[in-house]
Image 1 (tube, helix red, strand yellow):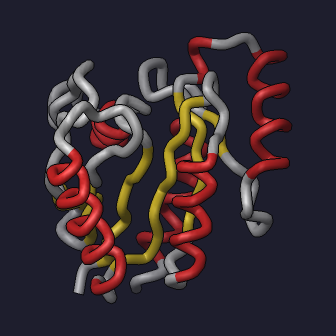
Image 2 (cartoon, rainbow, N blue to C red):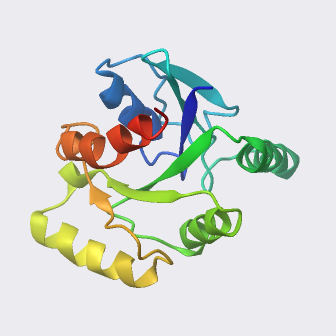
Length: 176
């Protein structure tokens, strides 16, 4: 059975842009400036032996409460029932840092025994000094200690090859 790697994060954190960068195609995954654009689970086949799964974002979407609850049930059902799910790449905006929704996501994943892998996107928008400062602050808040968060920019591809080497390749090779 193919492995699955899910991609989660706030609305407009760059999940779709990161997937496009990984696929090496600009418009493979629809990118929107409108929060809440992704409203279902989107599966993308990778090399005929794995799936990347784009999950609906959380936090900013302007939608009725019942719709947001429906998205939550969809994502929770997926996370709880997929034996082929190997990890969830938790994407955060390096400019914003992390808040209670983000730390809640990590804690929830850990509680259901799903591996959370932390990635900070949008590094092209800050200086290296500001990235270091924000990363140090985030490390103090994140309830995760078993791996170092990675910093990248889906737009400029800075840090993308390290992300592939350190995160994606090991997950894909673990299935063999």
